[in-house]
Amino acid sequence: MRFDARLGLAIAAGKLSAASIRWLGRGGGTALPGVLSNGLDPDVLDKLAARVPGGCIVVAGTNGKTTTSRILAETLERAGFGVIHNRSGSNLVRGITAAFTEQVSLGGQPAGEIAVIETDEAAFPEVVRRTKPRLIMLLNLFRDQLDRYGELDTIARNWRETLDGLDPSQTLLINADDPTLAAISEDSPAQRLTFGFRECQYTLDHLPHAADAAVCRRCGASLIYDELYLSHLGAYHCDQCGYQRPDLTFGARDITLDGLDSGSLVLETDQESLAIQGRLPGLYNLYNVTAAAAAGLVLGMPGEVVQAAIGDFQAAFGRIERVQVNGRTLVLVLIKNPTGFNEVLRTLAMSEMTDPVLILINDLDADGRDVSWLWDVDAEHLAAVEAPLYTGGIRSGDMAVRLKYGGIPPERIIPLGDVAEALDPFIETIPEGGTAFVLPTYTAMLRLRELLHRRGSVQMFWEQ
Image (cartoon, rainbow, N blue to C red; front, side, top):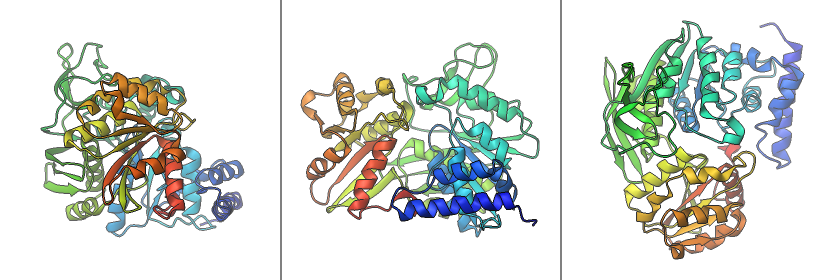
């Protein structure tokens, strides 16, 4: 391999800056090193991605990409592959670049045979262009922070242009239960494979307020849902033009939720049926499991390896993360948009849990400054749950008001102030040996984990 001086300088700058940031205790070094590396060599990501022997897998979607990419990375590692992965979840170009510079030698030799890259929705086109992935996984497209991303149609149009520019050597694995993903990928030159739910006992009666895919993207008529599973994900067709959900290459059936602890399914292909048990609750997590298992099989992983990796997988970094504090268990569940929040509330309501719940809402840049999305959340799910409800974070009051208008008696709603002020009073409400749930937005989760790290309860995300 011919030495590239400019690339070597970019790698060295990335490594040195990441080490310095961590040594100084100023963070994980998951973004700035990428900025410096890209400044020294604008093609650093392109060059390093091209050197990965087994190529790159890109995982994109509004919800679930961190969990799905982690499951896939652990599946590949269990099969004996070295995996380059932006495990911290820093998923803009700068974060992906920082992950690559950290996981290569100074000469640019990758530390792994294959790369699993989680990407932000807005960064997806550039990441695909620069990494030229062999496999692209598309999980879903939901309404997200409007002040960051714009309307969902804007993201969908940008994605479609990217997918139309692929070539037949590349593979697309899409969630066909999402009408938007099915429509924008149907003309791509890449080989398209699909996954989804073949049958499911957990259905919705109607499209939630936060759902977006209500009309056919071919003719504009209303879509008819034969079954509706989650937000706008389901089995659908259009009476006017005949469009319908594509056939499933990988179809999940026998879907079972086991309270707030786990879930299981059987994944069917033309060749096999794979029974999968995972320690991840909620229907939304079983979509992540379905996606990761399908990807593992596409990449040639044996079924028993896929089963074992998912069975042993433990969520981390706020995705159903269980933390021990003062003899109590806090379950951290990240919420960042209406659909994700709705599914967390739906899971809690279905379990009929009575444990205390603390909802932490911030409105910093990474959360989205516009908190009007709280009114797209079906807070009414909590009206039937007998759990004590606490609010915290910068917009604690806004969340308390939303709960009140969701039909929850005011005496059950207890505002506690910002994250630091809320933590200890909330912990004190939990019986010793008991469990409670904390639902934070992104920056609230970072602040919460920082406070828990000082107590020795968690590792910082770059240490995991």
